[in-house]
Length: 119
Length: 118
Image 1 (tube, helix red, strand yellow):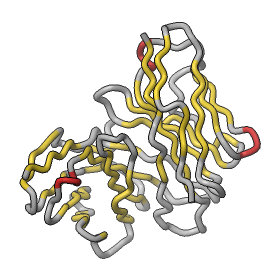
Image 2: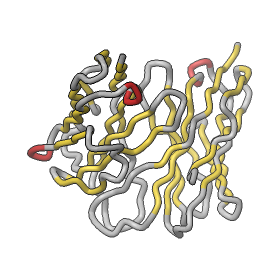
Image 3: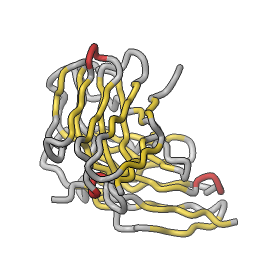
Image 4: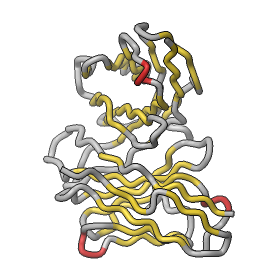
């Protein structure tokens, strides 16, 4: 079953506007983490922001914020004041479970949302 | 500090041939992960090393794929023999071993190897 769902395959946003990228997840674990990564056309995966399941406040990192609604199992990424350099593929990912050893488990990714920022 | 590096950046081979991908994690990172993205689909987990040991190889698609991490430093992923459906981008990621509490312990990704099987 799909663990991470990103329903928006692509979207256009005008420069300086805000954009919200949707992400819903499915897990029965109480402890999990949610991540957003950006993949520009150059191909590298760039970590943007993290939200832990026990975090009471929504995560923010500069122009990125995460709208975490635990009961709805959603973790939407908000990019404020879009810039041309924000054009990229954006992936939502989840890591499930409590760490029981000194190691960290796999990430499960959504299909991604392609964002194109226009002047 | 150097990031995660992968070699080669691109590889084009014919069906039935063998290809070996290499990943050099960030120095000091004991966790090393392999993922791949087949055209138009999600990025899928392949396997996870902690140092030289395979912690989780549940994502390996079949026995044509062999991953190694001798000495706990760099890792190789060999595909033998390659099939058409193996085409995609193979990512490697690394992270620290974290403390015994929930913290995000981000995975740092390499640029990927684009594999094309003809």
